[in-house]
Length: 78
Image (tube, rainbow, N blue to C red; front, side):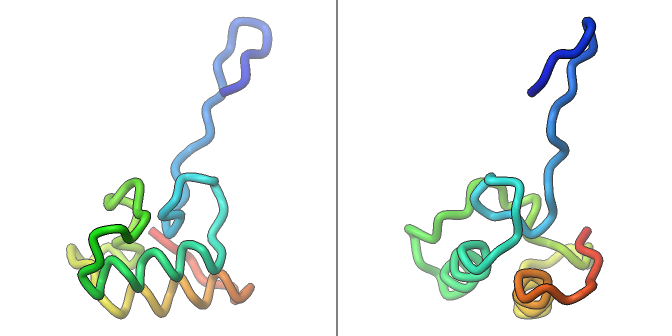
């Protein structure tokens, strides 16, 4: 959060960012893979940002898109 002349600017959530660092990278891919595999210590902070294709499910389609984004592909998440 940044305050400039009485205006508060807050970072918007980033779809695919599973750990809350405002970036989509391999850490997010790993956390999502662990979450989908059922690991309890997956590291996902906000599950609302995991459904990156907005189909109402958390699945391998989301994992592929997050991995593509982390690899630098031009994909839109969320």
